[in-house]
Image (cartoon, rainbow, N blue to C red; front, side, top):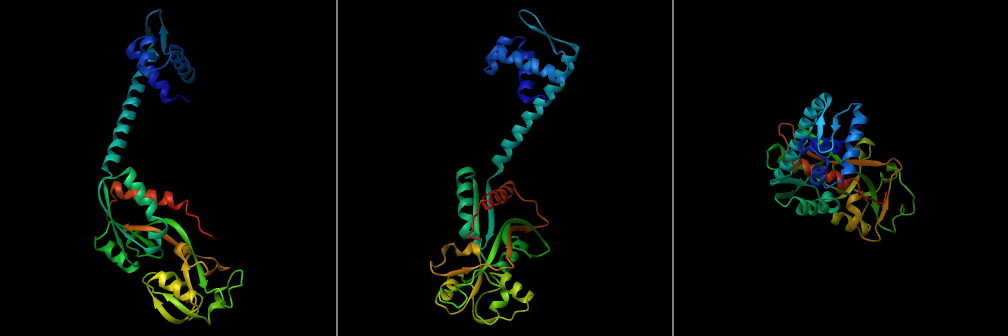
Length: 295
């Protein structure tokens, strides 16, 4: 298939009229230009030019090809302008609703990227729970927000990364030596439960498995949950992404059934995302693909 470099060489040669000046314009040797033109003629199976001692003459076929190549190069130039404009449009402000787990594992890398590559975009962060972020989205207080499926049907949900739910317990808990757990093994345990506003997934999977947990504490701060579990006041289930700062001796157990929460970015159906918002979603997915947890 003919290449853009061959088109440029041919177009420049026609405009200059000779190989020497074409080579100077493109910073290539005459032989490189000649080779590019010959390859283009071979690819198209057409004779495009007649080579004279001091100049070149277009064949009738060459004139037709030249017109089309001119249009292609004009479109290429327009594309470059559009790309430049898109990059320049990544500015202004972007309001983002964030969850604590996202703040820990993903957001720092994303923010560093934008400070380095798009410093004109002012990113405003609002940390909240599921209900708050959904309300902020519906009321236009934020442009986009991190949420976990299932979510409001009135919102578009763009998946970013998957997060495994694991059981945490103190090192001297009777189940601490188990390789993995079945959810049924936890039905008689004392639970330190994350409030539903910060984690709907735990209550969802317990309800689905018909387990009525004995909740001794119902808390909204993940670090407090981990500390209390570490003191053997009860067990809990948390997303694996939150455990990167867990106490060293806190025991983490995967389930045989494997429970996953799907973290993504949501926004209203009725809005068109700005170039800055689209780039934010893209970069989040890029960095999320490299997240490594101890699954």
